Structures are given as C-alpha cells and as structure tokens.
Length: 218
Ligand SMILES: C[S@@+](CC[C@H](N)C(=O)[O-])C[C@H]1O[C@@H](n2cnc3c(N)ncnc32)[C@H](O)[C@@H]1O
Image (cartoon, rainbow, N blue to C red):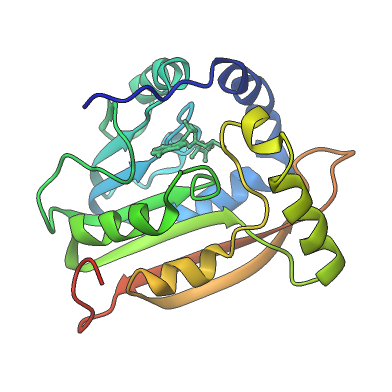
C-alpha cells in the first residue's frame, strides 16, 4: 500500500489528549461499541489503539488498519498488551487489502469524520464484511440544532480539518451509513464532552448490517 498519509502534529496531540477522554465517558462508550463481538474483526483508523483493551475475548483476531505512522507505532505497542490478538497494518479505510466477505464485524470509531471519502470507506467496509456481518460505529456527527450545525460547518470550512488530521465536525455520518447500503439495527444519540472546557458534541453509537438487496458499490 503506498500513500502519503501523515499528520505528525495531530498524531502527537491525539496521543497526548485521547487517554484523558477515556474517563469522561468515552471508555464506557468503547465497551458498549465492542460488546458481544466475536470472530474476525476489522477496525479502521485505529489511532493509538485505545479500543484494543475493550475487545471481548470471544474475538479471535482484530485487524487494525492505521495509516498515520506515529499513531500506528503506538497502536502496535497497545496491541502487545491487548486481551485478544491484534494485528496492526498500514492502510486506508477506502482501499482495504482484503477479499470480499472475510470479516465478521467492522469497527469505526471517531474515524469517519476524518477519512477523505467516508461513503467510499463505508462501501469498502461493507464489501469486506460477511453477508451476516455487522458494522459497529461510534462517531461524532452534525448537530440537530441549527445554530450548532452552522458553527460546525464554519469550523469545517476553516483551518480545523488541517489542524485536526482531516476531522470534519458537520458530517451526517448516520445518513452516510444508510447511503452505503447498511440497515441500522440499533442507534443511540449521545452527547460527549471531550474536555472539561469543551462544548458538548453529538455522537452516534450503533450497529448496522448490510442490506441484503443492495449491490456492493451501489
Ligand atoms: C480521531 S482519531 C481516532 C482513533 C481511534 N479510532 C479512536 O477511536 O481513538 C482518527 C483516526 O483516523 C485515522 N484516519 C484518517 N483517515 C483515514 C483513512 N482514510 N483510513 C484509515 N484511517 C484514517 C487517523 O490516522 C486517526 O488515527
């Protein structure tokens, strides 16, 4: 896989601040995100590997894809102490080096805001999932409040995405998941504060399955 994905400043900042978010509800959300999973799992944009400690032991293997070199090195370290087997590889969510239908579950957490082509990435996840496979997601999304959504769009049009590793605040990720051919099984809307002085940010925590009659790539 050749790509030039590198966000050295963001990577170091995320590595520094993200462990502190675990105690502010995010750790509990990761538990719920991964609860009940089993078999072979693909996780895209694994970052520094904060999900790894939360995988249930019924999972046989996690293949964790992370394109950012510094975060990937931290993910490899985190994989070494995970309760399940985790293999960390370089790669992009929108171009997965795996055959169709080879995973029981796919995990996307705090990543679909950052991928350049979220719909492409979701279609790719659908392609590598077994027909009865499930997508688990935990993503921050556009607000339902018009004034807050306007602010989020202003941020997205500013230097924010460049500072924050490609992150967009105003993505309607729930709609993208449906547009990629998934049916939502459960979806909860949560409000998360990433820091004591941060504004509340709406998140979705959900499970989706590939719709039976939607053709891959549609
Ligand atoms: C905010 S971090 C979240 C990390 C981790 N998923 C978590 O829950 O803490 C976003 C991650 O997405 C990764 N990322 C961005 N674009 C990506 C892409 N196209 N494919 C895969 N990962 C990507 C970044 O390198 C970064 O690790």
